[in-house]
Picture 1 (cartoon, rainbow, N blue to C red):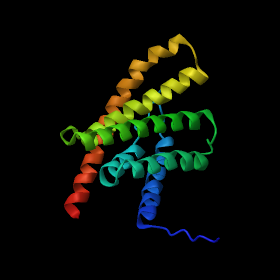
Picture 2 (cartoon, rainbow, N blue to C red):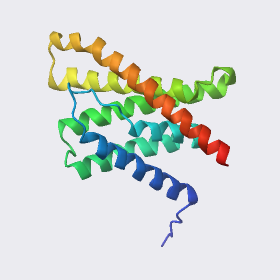
Picture 3 (spheres, one colour):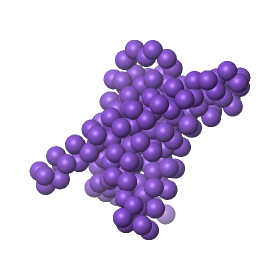
Picture 4 (cartoon, rainbow, N blue to C red):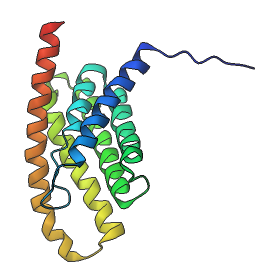
Length: 175
């Protein structure tokens, strides 16, 4: 039996937004970093915009495809960098799913772009740190970096959330 799979408008939207997130991801990977894990995560701005505009399933697709395709293009697929990026993306997608569900059940709770971004950034860092500790550097001294990395995640999450909120505001005023 031959089945023809139809491409939907949502498929095109996710592909376009994923391409935008991948472009930002690749450009950001060229930025110097004083310590491993200190990256602004600006591609996650796109994920937050997608979450607020189209829901967490679309945001999950954009986030996970960004990691997969970005790692293929950067030549890091199946490397430690890929594993850390994937673990962070999975952790942030899970927390965004939870926060999104919570906002449906408790509409007054709605986190908004800033809240979602901070939650995602903190979860991303926690997921990466957990895998780094469990798989790559299982040494107690690594725990000394955790407060610094979580503070960086908080700051970058707030920055990304403010950018996402501004983007959403511009998108909704133009519509």
